[in-house]
Amino acid sequence: MNRRGLLIILSSPSGAGKSTLARRLMRWDPDLSFSVSATTRAPREGEVEGREYFFRSREAFEEVVARGDMLEHAEVFGHFYGSPRQPVEEAISAGRDVLFDIDWQGGQQIRNSVLGKHTLSLFILPPSIPELERRLRSRAQDTDEVISGRMKKSRDEISHWPEYDYVLVNDDLDETESKLKTIVQAERMRLSQQPDLVDIVRRLNHEFEELQS
Image (tube, rainbow, N blue to C red):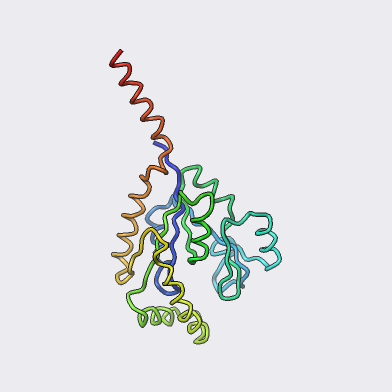
């Protein structure tokens, strides 16, 4: 049977592991499409245009939003982030799942959009706040000031966990990955993702009628 693609939303406070889990999910299923976000922040060392992000000026980003061509967008740490709408619609219509590594604001907008019924949303929690800070510092990407800001913001981000379909505590990365894969496999069989079922059941009923005639 054909199936409709899922919009798989992964959210978490910075440092809880969602980006690592997103990369592992992509390696597990090479057919999974990653939604490359647009952002107004400057590229970090090693980041490539069109791979990690589409880097845009604030003015260009606002023009795209004004045209209604962003599926979701939000301002985070002084920069805009957003997901272009058309590639997502084309992917799920073709039966390909699209993975979003976004914050709760973006996830909320997608769940409330016209594509909301096709979303699978997962929130990743850290096992503890000290461990969350340790992970942020071990990345060696941010200054103490930036890390402090991320830690302060994490409390608000964690407060949105009840809005998600599933919540996973990432105390063991391999175990969390295994649970994530199980959830994705099950949700792909959700009724809303199997448009062919209506025709199949109609055919079965027709066959019943033929047997009785």
